[in-house]
Image (spheres, helix red, strand yellow):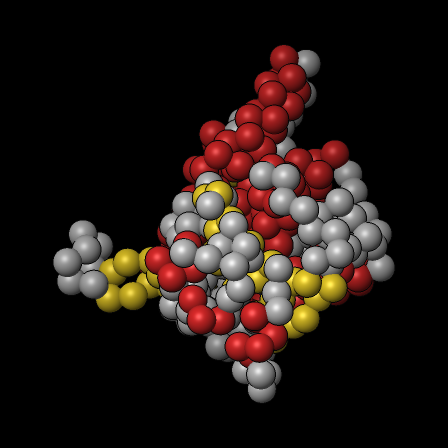
Length: 290
Ligand code: GUN
């Protein structure tokens, strides 16, 4: 059984990007710059944004982190985005989600200039993805594609099941896996909370992407031997014996899945690291121009 180690695959992506930024620096040019905006102080969001900023530094990118209070007016956030849209030294803009309830997520996403939308959430970029045009692929699905590529996982003609239909992961993932690309050409089924025969659907899958955010949801009896398992779950589960008081749990029962799968991503150490690799690649792409 192959462990799809995110550390290894992400390190390969970052090494290539670092070479590119070193060449830019040697030529006296500026390097890509990511601006991240964090509204409020959600623990998980703090961790993700800190990791994104740290990874920028490790790859030779510039980064700025703008923190806004949880009760900030929507107009203030939109004004910050407008300022960054105009800033020639800022290549990519990322507003960490989720946002507080009084802020309309779609309005914020649509305020980001599509050419700086390194999350690939703007409707223009989603439309481009659907049509197979050059675009920013949302970082998590992009990272998964990079992972499949790194470990030479064959996808052509396979039955892929994506569990979850979020705009961040499930929906773009299903589009990519069905696209006519190297890590695509699958027959894709999207499952969600109203899917009736989920177990039978999963038992027919050669590749399963679990992205529903329910710890240990996918169990050994739901998968067939030889399946490739991509676990996108990163839920914090209380655990008083852990140093931080919680553990990160995936959507897959890892031990049970390991007994049957031909390849699996661990949690942590799998998809999460690839999300950052996808974001960094998008930031380089924003710098170079779509
Ligand atoms: N929240 C969870 N995943 C993501 C992501 O990929 N981008 C942003 N901006 N927020 C997130």
